[in-house]
Length: 398
Length: 238
Image 1 (cartoon, helix red, strand yellow):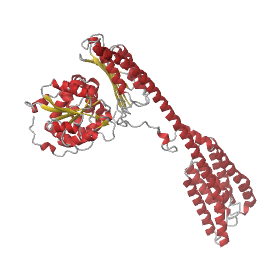
Image 2 (cartoon, rainbow over the protein chains, first blue to last red; image 1 turned 90 degrees about the vertical axis):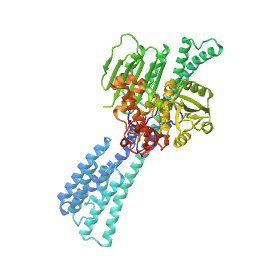
Image 3 (cartoon, rainbow over the protein chains, first blue to last red; image 1 turned 180 degrees about the vertical axis):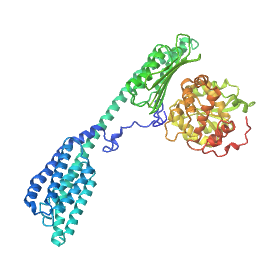
Image 4 (tube, rainbow over the protein chains, first blue to last red; image 1 turned 120 degrees about the vertical axis):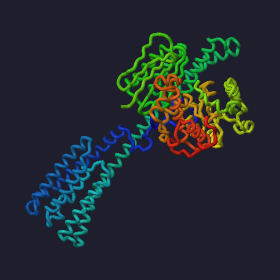
């Protein structure tokens, strides 16, 4: 009982909070329901394939022939070739993950790519610095894209900055600091970075948009469902009100006309029953009927139709409970209600971690053994002390 | 039912003056009839305007106030009266927990649901007149279900006593169930109520409740975080 929203189920228009239109409307992307994520995953499938194809095309159609052509002319050809092979493995692994709807392990793969980046630049040597044989210049950015798919765009920018730093370091170390070399390096970097960034940002925007739209749709559905439930609760309540006012009016009319004697115990009992029913009705103010309260109310209505005045008071909102726990909470009460005589008081005190339901009726003769126990997480207690019969069920979150 | 026997002693001799503020004459008549059966109480003035009623009965010791007057919740008026030291017992058909707790926060000495009947009404007024807490079952329910983040922290026993009192409406049954005396049950319930004097805005009535609770040994000053020596009021110890 000890926490969270105390939205009362008892009456009170004054301080009742407005019904919540479920989380999704507040910040669609942040708290999107699972359906929205599914939609987002599906919607960037095309972009994933495009990125994989571009990376593969660069790697196989541009980088591989250039490396083979340059061959032994490079400073350390084995390093360049090994880099190419490892990058292929990284690419294939990332592509498989992406095609299956997952995301590659960004951290380790990104680190591996940066190591390859530096190794290949060094392995290609000064002569091939600006040639396609130094394939990391152009092609590697697409692999960054694959391993960082759906990660924050700043990660990609950091990777590209590291890439640029490695390239510039090589340019400086090899002494290629003439204006022509520097501008060539700048152009290479610019040319090879902008397109991946554009694709990356574009895909992210599309995904976000799709997720937003899906979240909005889900939120709309949730609101509609709540409205329908509230409407149903209202109709049910109106039907019961019609019934109650009928019986109450009847008693009042008879009293007013002098046909009924207020001293007559039967008349008083009818008045008590009508009053108890009206009070219960007034106490109902939940917009979306709670399953546990619904069951208890139904049991109370039934007992009352058999002539038992019954009060049902509820404090707090029960959390969503599995059916068997709800049964464990409600069943002993409905059974005890069937044996009740005189009057009954049914109470529910609920919080996110605890729900206690209790039925108190006057004690009377008749077989009735005290019981304690219950099953699973629901505790059940039934006792009589000569004054009252007391049935209590209690669930605690374990 | 569970009226505090001490409550009457303090004012033995002269009856306690009560003012009733309600905008339904039939309710005023009903409450007046309830109180008429209790010789220790006397209704001094009634009406639908708190200011006018209190001008007519400036020395009323307890004000029974309907929380909804002419369609408006008068929590602000309640706070004003409580701050001025008026012992206000709120009674209302709006017995949802938030409203009850808001009334306590505003300084009401007690909250009574209109359907709680004569015994609770008389007991509440008697207790209020001597600045003693009285917690009818509906209020106990509101306190035990209080889920506000700044709610007072109750001990397990206090919480259980409130819960069982709310459920059974019989302190004798609660006592049997908890295997303690009825007196102890009442202490747990009252102690929980006293913890609520810290909530909401300050009011003279809260200070008086607290002071009396300390005098009665219900709580110790150090149990109440913000206690500020109101206990030294020169009131005779019962």
